Image (tube, rainbow, N blue to C red; front, side, top):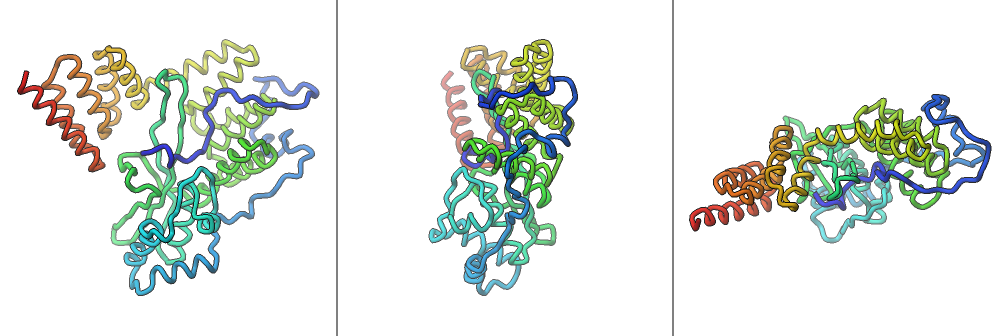
Length: 387
């Protein structure tokens, strides 16, 4: 799945510089004086600020122009299935609409008017239109595997969002901004509209924070949490915002709340480690770094990236060990088998290489991947015959 469709729900950078006016010392880290409730109701970022109230934003707003577009698109369709097919064609198959990807989060109305947006923007628009046509459409979160740098030190966790359509009679359809790259092996779940709004406001907060508008960033992170206080990315983002504005105890409380929701959140743990490092609490920082590393070693995708590094360094047995672990955790990832095949080939075992490349072809969900693995398998078999 191409990175262009990743939903930006959190920033994984360990350190974010910021400027704040000097003032009286705030609560100390580890004191427990700041609570999650205080971040929402008593944050210093809200003091004296004329905060916007984003709660009235309707991410599913339909306009007369959108209705006219739909009436034209589905003219003559007699049932939900036909209406859905025509809706998909009107948005994704008709060159006249030309919806273009960009990194900005938009409501349904804005996406329609601008013909641009990210995966959440597209999902907002499609859900709104589908429901107008009396098609049962829901938001669906998709867990995209974490991505690491080659050094394994930095990582990005993201959640993609697409549309789950229930046509009745056990007929389900998934509609995605980029259907060609959608991977059916990724874990996914239907979520409520409130959860979708939490995604939206968290995204908006990130966009405002990157633009330097901290008041609007705070207001949107706050609204995200008010929509769904179990949405951990909003708490992590809230922590990052307070940290860059030199309110470390508030940042600590926000990260801690994220860890209450998910005790294994590596982004919250990494940010806490950096926060404690800055404060000179090295022992506590190391504790969180150790937890992050322990968590990563249990992650099949991290082991895959370690295997990739091992292959590049010529340590093929280590690569095989990492990949065997990864496959025990995730049996349907074709790239694990492909790299395992390469590792065995480089280690001198052509029969094992053929076996695992055949397995990669079997579990691949995309036709392009199956073809690629098939060609590699043919090449391996030819190499075996020539040897």
